Length: 397
Image (cartoon, rainbow, N blue to C red; front, side, top):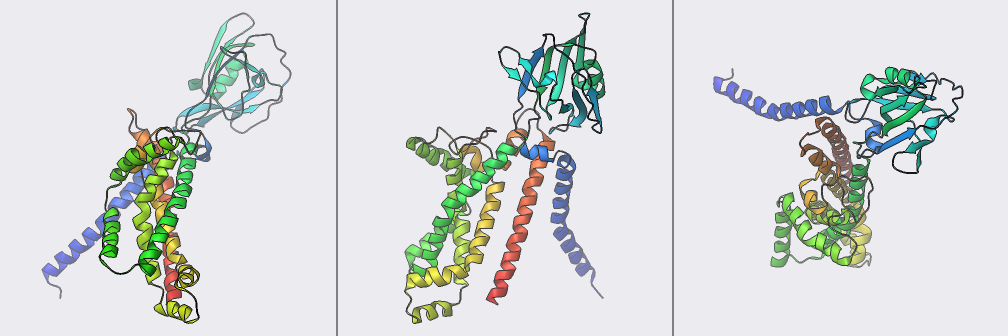
């Protein structure tokens, strides 16, 4: 029979062990409830900044007979040859979207206000406002808040457009996705040769003396430095360095990748070195006994057998790059860009969340949608790491 104290201790153990899971599930429920509706394909492929076109069409035009495409949920304007539909944009706001434009529609050749340019209204754009005039000169106002059906009805009542405002969705994360991808590729190109090379030296060639022990201690110390300190190093060292070379002007993807490189060196070095140490000494002895040099043994025997650990280091590094924000705020900047260049500022997915949450009106839905993407990516990486580790241990066994 259990004593009361044993029961209390067991209860406390279960409570504290489950507390972390409760907090984790609460966070996941909050993020998915806020961001799941905003997580769409348009969010992934759209630009963050909206493009707005202010157009008009006042000259006399010929209105041919347009054929209604009969799109489900859409409302067709027979006067202008366009179909409109109620929709939700990336900010989870109700909008009216142009879903069809006839090839002969006047919307294909609108005058841009203040210029001599002609603008083509395309499917997918938002229709925010239309000011029309009928044959009697009466003004007709069609607004987005009236809905697609009313706007289509009002369009049919006018024969001239004095002002029309259309926009793209905006608030997409295409630029941040590309920036994150470039950061991953550039950082791995920098950190893998340095990290794997240092691990090979420490494991296979370094003499076990004070200098080697000091090097290992410094590597351990680097892994405990807060990431914001690396960000300051990026701002003080790497930004001026690349500016001095004339390839950048301020924070850039290059300076961000260099900053992440020094952050990830301890992870890559330690993981690779542990993998090299797991290779049985008999492999080395057999290779040397067959006449291979120490260098040949390292690169043709030991290193190929440690590829599982190196791949694990790569996956751990990618997960850290995707989730890092503090260091990149200083090293790359917080300006959300749609045009991505290696020598220019930008935001990774994590910094994108910081940017949209630091303003006067935080966008919880968009931030949660981006968080879902990061969580899913990190989860997939964690599963991949476990699979690789199991296979590696099986081979070693």
